[in-house]
Length: 422
Image 1: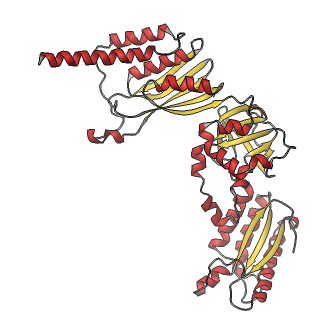
Image 2: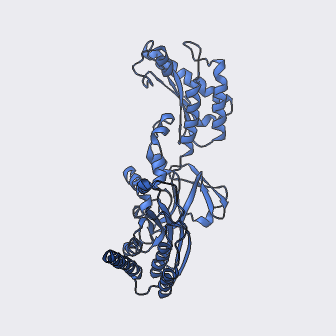
């Protein structure tokens, strides 16, 4: 029995010695004061704190406990630590590692110590700007040595790289870079665009985008159209963003920026989470959601209206039913309130009757809708009409009367470019 206790004591001493050795690992210019403070804290600890579980879980399911998240914001001369950790020892170790990374800088820590959850995963999210890949490796290795799960959100300073190269080298922007690359956005810029401002959505923002849902009511929505809405010719820095500033994007539409307070700047409905990342040919601002062009928003709104309350006509004629005029008045109001983009009114028919007659009827109905909208104040130069007849059936094949009713419809497409009255 005594031998077992003795072996257990030797094992415990070895673990403590290994952990202290781990803390001392790193740059020779590390902070001796911080290491000493850590050791003194360990020696002076006389009692364990009362355990406070992060969440009440059974011992057998503790592996499923939610991760504890700590944050490190890194710069060459300062590191700010925050969030939660599951032990004072880990908090002290993070401070020691930070002091070693910026021996001549400042380290600030504001941790919440969660005890009683030492088996939970601790995620450490590291953000900030670094010089190059060796600098990235130096920072990550320092924190990886502490046994936490490091989430790399560091950005390499881009003074010698293009905006797209900086985005490529930023882990939290990997998805939007893949989309920029697949859409050939860089090739579309042309030589006349010499500098850029890019509002780059994070990976989580890109994952939240449901392009299929957008395409349900917005015809021919292409991701490249949305991506171009995130790029502005010229350089715009955070200190230039005043409330209600409007800037023109690569696709010709306007972005509205607004200042909520000193720490919150909105681009449309998206918040800028990391600003003024400088590259050789422009600047990048990281945002927390994908920006949807105004033309697409308007098109979705219009088609949702006529999707739930279709425009009706007298049988076999282009005359709008009285019950549908209030629907078109709502359409006109949306167009007046959203002046960007031009409207194409599309007429569609079912397959009953001769094809050429269906084509003419669908065009006549589209023209009737166009004239009604103009009479309600929509600018004539931004609206046109076209008939597709039975060439774009929504339900094919038609089996029931409802199928045919679904195919007899008016739809709207909002585009940039000159409208042409038909």
